[in-house]
Length: 116
Length: 113
Image (cartoon, each protein chain N blue to C red):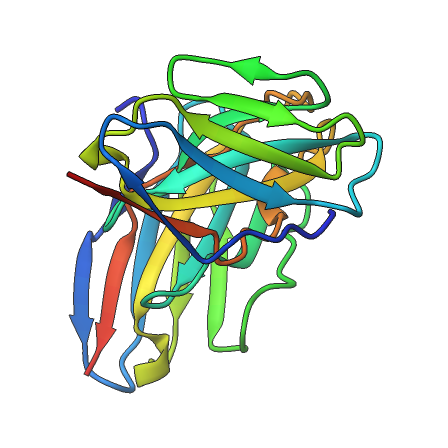
């Protein structure tokens, strides 16, 4: 598709289980971001990938969170031993690496995670 | 990236212009002003950006003060579908790490019939 694609769109999991969320960025975009948004809150930056560079993990809230990006395209965000406070919508975004002011960020529709 | 300040909420009558303010008093000379919006249950959507000149596109207009310490996003004829959270962010235009900018809590715009 033409936009950022995320799956699953909704996920309900039991506390303590691991979950994987997938992001397929816009073709050709080398920058990829993951955010978390709790109900009624703003966007919280989690992690950033740019090409083959080491990812910027400065926003990850704990070591239960990790992400990888294979082949410079698809990314997977993994949350281990989920807790109820992990319940949120997880948004993925991508942008080109042209470096100019028109470097717009395009967001996916998000993956809604509910930990019960 | 410079910090921005926005009112938490605003109302607007349908068909009227919606004027959403944003303060960015610590903006640097090479930082651009960007606006995004997030309609309920959807991902954020890019609206417009500018450096110092006023900008207009099919969605909105952006007015930036001469000292660049504040800006206003204008939706000329608001519709009910414009009800959303509007985020104002500033960042260096040449910075490819665009998405690490802080989005903050934004302004919740409610367009009323």
